[in-house]
Structures are given as C-alpha cells and as structure tokens.
Length: 637
Image (cartoon, rainbow, N blue to C red; front, side):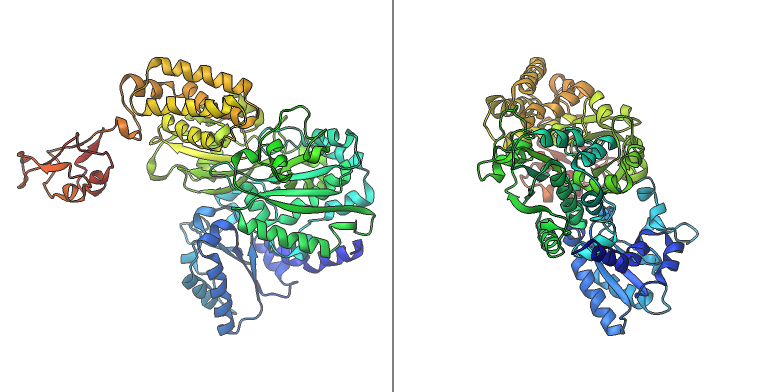
C-alpha cells in the first residue's frame, strides 16, 4: 500500500467516524454526507458480550431484515466504559444511549426508532441521559462521561474493532506515516521524551528514556515487546484497548521499532482474553495485507513484524524479565537486574517493553505533538490515566481522566457514589502491589507521586472502592492470599515471606493475634521489600503496610477486643436473636443448615408465639438466619 492509498481509505470512511465523535446537532448535519440514515453501535467488549450483546446484534439484524430496513449500519465496537449497564447500544446521529439491552429491547428499538420517521424509545435509554422534564441530553454530558478525557481509549466504542479501514479513518497509522516520511529515529525519541509520557504499567518510568537506552545499546538485533498480561484482580484496562482499538498498539510498536532499530515485536497477552486475542490476530492479518506491517512498510524501506505469545495466567509474568523468559519458552521467572532489558532483554538482546495503555498514547503524541500532550495532567505526571473502576461503586466501568483528577471526582461524580447510602471508607489502587487510600485523602489529586506520598501507588490502573462494610484486615489478607499463590518461588523472601505474612494475618482475623504480631508483620515486610528478586515480592507487603499505617485501630480491635467492626471476619462474629423483635415464625430455624436454632420459653409482649434462640456452640456463622429474618430480629455482633 502507498501513502496515497492510505489517505484514500481515510477519506472514504472519515464521515462515518466523524458522526460518532460529534455531539447530537453536529452529528445530524454530518450524517447527511454518509450513505447511512442511522448507525447503531453495539458494544462487543468482553463485559457486554458476557451479557449477550451478540444476541442483541442478531436480533437487530433479523428485525431490520423483516422490517425492510437497509439504510442503517450496525457496528460492533469496543468498550463504551459504563460496564455496569451493559449491553450498551448507541444510535447515531441522535446519540441515543440505550442501556441494559436485551434481544426483545433490540426489536423494540428497530420498530419504534430505526424505522423511517421513528422516535427514540425513552424508557430504554440510560437514565442519566433523561432529565426530570423528559428532555434528553447527549451521553457525553452525563456525570460519568463529562470529566473524562479519552486519549488511550479514543477509538474504543467509536470504531468497528475488526475493521482496519475504520481504524485508519479514525486516525490510526497517521503517526506511523509521519514518522517514516518526516522524522529520524532520534526525533521520534525526542518527541516521546518531551511529552513526559511515563509507563502506565505501574512503575511510571519515562517511556522516552527507556527507548533512548535501547537505541544506544549495541547490537544488530533488538526487540519491542508489549505487556498485555494484566494480572491484577479487577483490572481490565489493557484488555479493553486491545478489544476496541488493536491497531493503535500495532502502530505504536512499529514506531518504537523504527526509533530503536528493531525489526521484530512480540505481544504477550494472557490466554484468558479470547476476544482480545482474536481481534489482535485479525488486526495483524489486516495490517500485513495493507503493507502496514512486515516487509517494506508503506514502500519506505522499513521492515517490522509482530507476533503474539499467549501467557498461561501467571501474575509474575507481568514483571518484565519474567515475561521475556516466558516468551523465550521457559518457565516465567524473573531475572536479576542489572543488566536491564534495554541492554540485555529478550534472547539477551536489547529490548523495550511497555504495556498496552502506554502504547495507546504514542499515536496522539506523534500526531498532535509533545507540546499538546504535556499540557495535560500535572507537572510530573503528564497525560491521562485509564482506571478500571470497581468495588462498592454505582458506575462500575472503565474511565480515563487527566492526571491530577481528585479521588473525590472519580468516586462521587464519575463513579456515581457508594450504593445503598453507605459511606466511602477507602480506595485500593495498584492491585496487589498497591495500598489503600483512606477517606481523609479523598481530595488528593491522583498522579504517580501523590499516590506514593500517601502510601499507595498508581499501578496499572485498578481502582477498587471500599465502603464502611469492608474490613481492612480482611482486604489485606485477600491480597496476600493472591500474591502468596502467585509467587513463582524463585527467591526465598517472596516464597516464604508471603506465606508467613498470610499466616500472621489469618491469625489476627481468627481472633488469635497478639500485639507482637504487628511488629513481626512490619519487620518481615521490610525484609521482603529490600531483598525480594522482583516487584512481586518487593510490593506484596504494600497492602498490609498501608492498612496498618492508616487503619491501625482495626488491627488493634481484632487483637485486643476480638472484634471486627465491619462484621466480616467470621471467627470474630456472633449471631443472636433479639427476643423482643422475634415473632416466632421459625423461618430462621427452618433454614439453619446445622439446626443451631431452637424455640425458647420467652414470649415477647404483644406476640403470640415464643421466640427463638441460637446455640452459639453449634452455630457456624453462615448468616442464613439473618438473611431469612424479615423482622431484623437476628443481629450480628
């Protein structure tokens, strides 16, 4: 393919993409220039697919055929972000945002909205777009989307994820064209350096500097790698980029290959991401067919190709040296550093490794310029950050905000606050390697340095919201269970340290802890941080240390009072029946799996039947009795 042919493709489909990017009024005008009266975008990401979005598409196509509608385009896209309301469907040019769609709803939309002269089906819209007076606002003006700024996710939910023509029309490969025709490798690296882009995989190392080191390393063979392993519990940022805009990653890796003098790249993606893997395979095939990957790219004399390597789900393979060891066909274990991968990495050759989100930022930096990118974010953390927002939050989903956005803005405005009127207690960032941020820091601007300063870290972007019903000792135990299970066992501090830390935490949650245990935990944690081989062991104690620091009273309550205020640690719980509230219906006794509930001799004033009581010696603390009591007579203490 030539550059002229690339431009022709871009022009041919540009109007379709423009309609989807614009607000309602502009989109309606732009739609006049397209071949389609309407466009229907349905999320084809993993979240919505698991909620049967493919069946929604099938019913759309079937009903449209029955109704004789042939001027409406159906597009399977990537993630729209508001995962809690999937499957999601947006109809353009109106921008009608339909949520929690079913096949039956799809038929209704076709018959009432998509037909010539039809109108929006208000009762099926995302409630945030419908005001009290019945008027409809663009979804971009809702609290969830209003404060977001999509750079890495710019094409997710906008283009057909499996169509390279749409990717090109949306701007993919513009940066590659610019780099190969008008920039030297040194100029490319200088641009990335000037942008201030830091690695989004967790450590926040300056991306341009990493490329600089690899270019300066001696050797005819060099490699470019993409870390798409994403093993943090609750994280799905990288997966969503690969599912919604895989070409942005392929393009960026090719640019990096040109910049450092590499001709081969590898994408290491976990096998548990079947949709992402399939779309990567499709994107690779299309890019090679278009001459955007492989030999003599765009006829400009540069060769670069990319292969996929599947990971088996080992968390440790998210660490760069363990990932490269796995690509080489060995058991995924980390290597001592130095030498660093930029000097001696994959197959002992100079290698750069960035994660998916980092790669997704390269195209806008090259096309719009480092100066533009560096105006976004904070002084030391430029650009935006993608977060997988989960836990006790109303709007579970994928968000991208400028660095420096406060935790309060994310939780209360974008996230919609805590459900059921509960209070915000903490936010856990950085996954198993991060820490917990208590409510007192909710107005902290989020960036790399600020999170470290308050005892947490950015990590790859998981953001788990915790409410007042969360036990901080138990949450630390949860992350230790994960890291202890995922330790590769190569070094003693991590192999033994994680298990010993877990034993101490378990002891505390069972009401057997002693004050000395807190000292032991902190001493052991410091040894692990200073002597473990890789970041898994070095950072495994972080959730424990941050919760001991910020929520020490909870640990002391478990140890001294054998009490779990959140009512989570079963060994410290007791269930009792308030005999004055109990009407003697017997639902608790009928459902008790161990027959620990019997009728007492006490009849409460105003009641006809004797109340029930719990034999604490038999009780297994399952909570079934409380769940079945309609009168809130069963109390948890």
